Structures are given as C-alpha cells and as structure tokens.
Image 1: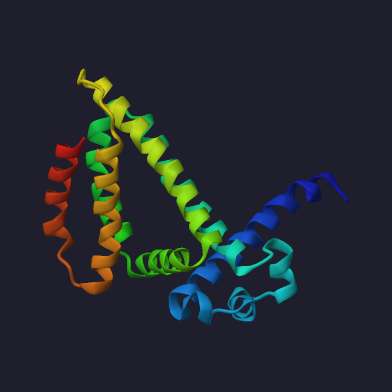
Image 2: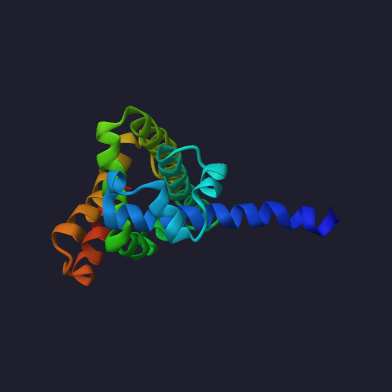
Length: 198
C-alpha cells in the first residue's frame, strides 16, 4: 500500500462512519429507534448491512456514537468560549446559536428519541448520563472562569448550570409542542436569564 493510501484510509473510514451516523439519525427521527433496522440504515447510507456492522456492533452503539458526536460539538463550543477575552459576553453572544440548534425540529426529535430510549434501556441511559456529566463538568468550569475573569466571587456553579441546561434542553420539547414559537421574542429573555444565572 502506498504511503498516501495509508494516510487516506483513516479519513475514508471516518467519512463512512459519519455517513452511517447521518443516515441513522435521519432514520431515528423519521421512524424512531425501534422502528429503525440496520437494513433501513444501510439503505439510507447506501452501503451494505455488513459494512455498517464493520463500524458499529448494534443500534445501541450507533446511539452511543451519536451522543458522543453531540458531546464533542458541545465541547468544541466550550473551547471557543475559553479562547475569548470576555467569557461571560461570549456566552451571552452565542445564545442565539443555542436557541436555533435546540429548536431545529430534526435535532429536537433525535434528542427526544435518544432520551426516550435512555428511559427504557440501561445501556443507553449510561451513555447519555456519562455524556451529560462531562458536559456539566466543563460548563461548571467555564462558569467559574467567567466569574473569576470579571473579579466576581467564585461559587459552586452546579445549580446554575443545571438550570441553564434545563432551560435550553427544554426548548427541544417546546419546538415539538409549539413549532411556530417566536424565537425572536425568546432571545432577549434567554439572554436575561443567562445573565442572572451566570
């Protein structure tokens, strides 16, 4: 195998893996976790079921990878906050991104489907809870750093972060229950709530 071929192999594998995850997410949104088979995912992904099993041993493993992908994206955003001169203002400025993501109907449906499966399936519950703990830990550290940078007293951030996460996670349910919600009206209220909680 040529050197450049060896370098491209992991990239091809990563691209295939993402292709499977995108296909699975679309299927879970449309048909639910239990209504989705590996055969359906393979059809949407445009590859054989055997190829999917090469990357993921089960649908639970696919959910685990989807949860991990979401966590990585959240932690990337935390890294962006950490690189800003004013952490507090950076968090306030990006509220609209969080609002738009949480009220996207496909994103909301996927999150609800994963949570529903976590309520029934201890293995999926463990995946979801581990990711949630990692995200909470990083957000608490960010909260402490933002207060310290502003010369404020550094306090236990756990309760504040819990309320912030509940506020944003709750938007997914609201988007499904009320898809025409007025995001422009919500935005200043979310910013006010975040300023209060931070």
